[in-house]
Amino acid sequence: MEIKQNNSESKGEFIAMIDGQQAGKMTYSWAGDQKFIIDHTEVDPTYKGQGVGREMVYKAVEYARGNHLKIVPLCPFAKATFEKNKEIQDVL
Image 1: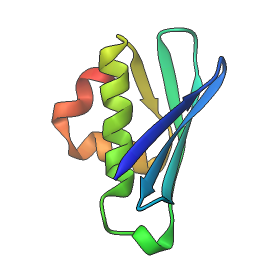
Image 2: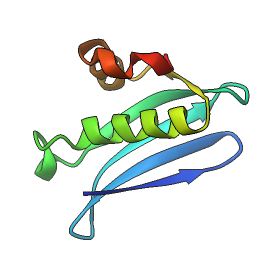
Image 3: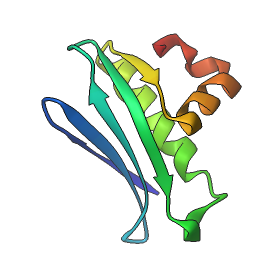
């Protein structure tokens, strides 16, 4: 699985690709210059249950850590992933 990130001044997204196909997308919005809000996560039904959503959340965590940013998980999926995985809560 490859996860690509597209980032602009106000919004961004993480796109999960599997064998050249888009398996999922997670979008975010910037809240100032030190924080971003994960607002939506979707996974193509073909790839459900394969950890695609979780991998996108972890990629966002990696990005946040590398850039000293905080994440606000408004999306129910992202929020649940943070609640279940204590090791990534340092970016909240």
